[in-house]
Length: 119
Image (cartoon, rainbow, N blue to C red; front, top):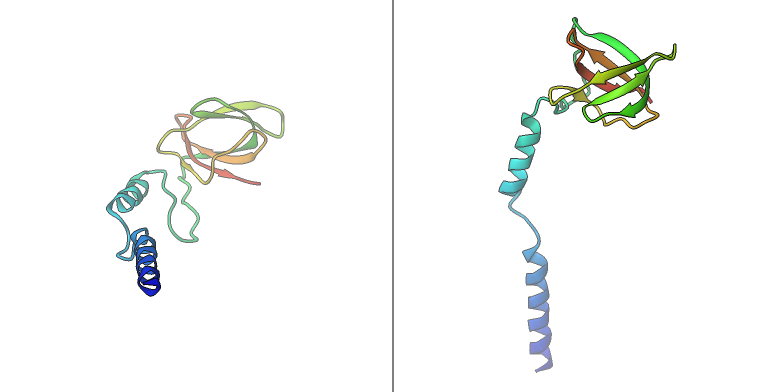
């Protein structure tokens, strides 16, 4: 009797542990999420190659003094503040916070093409 109870408890424990394990691979939901991230223009390229900087963009380097929704306010070394707007097409290596030093590559319309942290 004691052995039967022990076997049943062991079997129940093993089945509960196995129920949470996904041995087959990636679930459909996880695969969908990865596809959405890869499909966005802001997704980071895979590998060690740095992202290409368009020839028509000019560089701004400064410290983030404010974050205004879809824009960073940068103060350069001469003390001039500039608003750098970004959108879903802007590649950002990681979100900046007030006090971070960043380099922004801005196109002729004033929109950031690439923003990367210097620190």
